[in-house]
Amino acid sequence: MEKPIVGGQAVIEGVMMRGFGKVATAVREQNGNIKVQVNPVNSIMERFPILKLPFLRGSVSLIESLILGMKALSFSAQAAGEEEEQLSDRELVLTILFAFGMAAVLFIAIPTFGAKFLHEITDDPVYFNLAEGFLRLAIFILYIWAISRMSDIQRVFQYHGAEHKTIFCYEADLPLTVENVRKFPRLHPRCGTAFLLIVMIVSIFVFAFLGWPDLWLRILSRILLLPVVAGISYEIIRFAGRSQNSLVRLAIMPGLWLQYLTTREPDDSQIEVAIKSLEAVQD
Image (tube, rainbow, N blue to C red; front, side, top):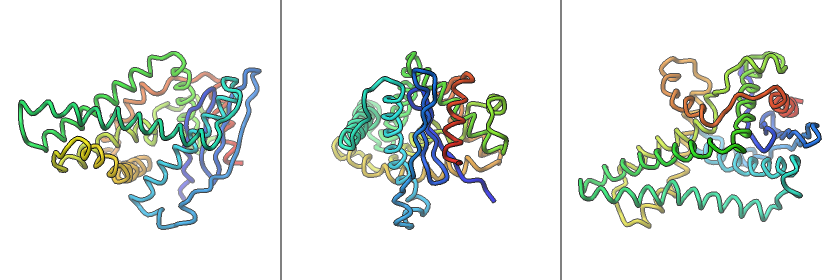
């Protein structure tokens, strides 16, 4: 039987793991102790099994992961001593909406507006859409590179590396010890960074033949088609994460290379936190 899939996310001074119907966040407190919060995952897909179908489950998983990730970040900020209290449900919703709005401006509005300057070269809408897609990809990579240069973010990226190494160790059926975890690579094919890169690439092909209407219609069409793009991308990365085919491995290499920016080699104390988080969802 295939092992249950476990996913994770780096947070402030800690790691969140999701699997076995639970989500656990382990955070290193200022006094050196590790604080662990465990909650059940009440997925809407359990109440509406139709949402588990391929190409539907991707969008649902993305939204649920975003909500769980924001809650884990809020808990980690409070546990690490950077915030006095966790975000309320209202503050959580407003934060997610603000993040989505900023992403829409950066990765949708700006690229589709910038592509219009190709009018001096061609009037073919396919070329406009392709140029928009590659501009979006360039902005995404530049954004990742820029935040990877920030000292505070680099520590989070160390926990990101610890998360990947720990999941690799779990998938290899080895005991979760610091020594075992340390020897695994920090680049994982199911990483969210790889998923976002696939989203950028898939969107190029999905949007390529939509024509070139007014700016507001272009932005609206991109937003409305995000579930389609997310659904296709989810199935690709899910398949790639389980496949041992050499061609599939070659195809996902760019997503692995990008993780050199979003992960760092963790120290033993950070690996210990990641292990506590994964043990909490397995328990």
